[in-house]
Length: 104
Image 1 (cartoon, rainbow, N blue to C red):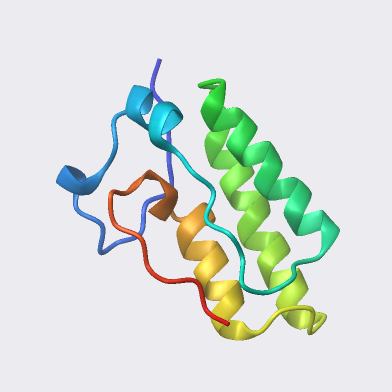
Image 2 (tube, rainbow, N blue to C red):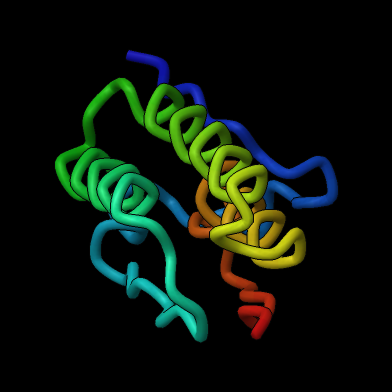
């Protein structure tokens, strides 16, 4: 089976966590801002998919990217917050050993 993940272009393969380590070491960083319920549910579904090693992780990542855009357009979050969510969850920063600080 091949797992497809969206990965930020500047991420290096050597900084990626192996699937077993992803499940073991993953800690959801706390948000310093509130997010809408629909975005929260998308994030929870992605985390569940990662923890259960499911094959549709890329679909959940796409949902988060879209929901972050929706929240931005609805002015529920700011652009830096939307981009951080998209990079962390949508483009694979959650699978990296490095973590950028969450914006205010």
